[in-house]
Length: 215
Image 1 (tube, rainbow, N blue to C red):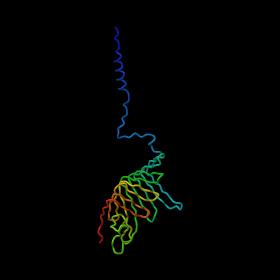
Image 2: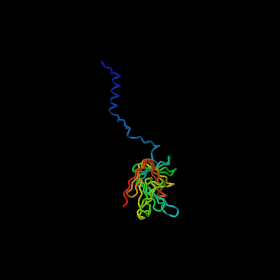
Image 3: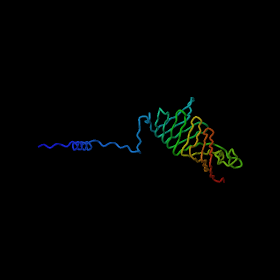
Image 4: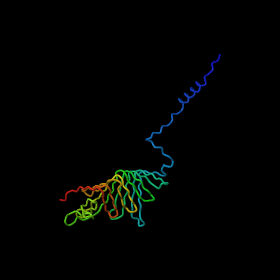
């Protein structure tokens, strides 16, 4: 007598063989974002260096970056380890950050993570030996310092964690608390505005200053 094969048992055996032979499914962890075709960049470059010139052949600005991703649809470019140099005015200015986003339509650059903007201005020390006061008549902690020592150039450096750089106007506005340093003097505040053309920096909000004594 032949034994009948149980249909439920046959189905279970078939499923077990398929489970053993089939490739395991891929697992997408929450920490690993899925990149769609729409979010993929249109162009990519490493160790990028761009220089712009005016009609006379003089340099206008320079942009350096370790990595660049450009997204044509949204008209933006993402940069890492970037340096932006402007050559307007007498001495120009330099802005750097760990990363940034350039918005082409507005000609604005958002800098983040270790933002640093610096410029150098020559200014003579007042005859009475005192430091120049701000426009409000108060101490130069308001960010209106325009002093040097005997006409020697002194670098002014602004540091913050987020900043908007308007390339048309050559101005910078911090999006986080900032510190302004000129020589050995340091001033910090809640917000910072820098006019690179005029080479003037203004701190607002809760302003705190530290000055080296003048001998």
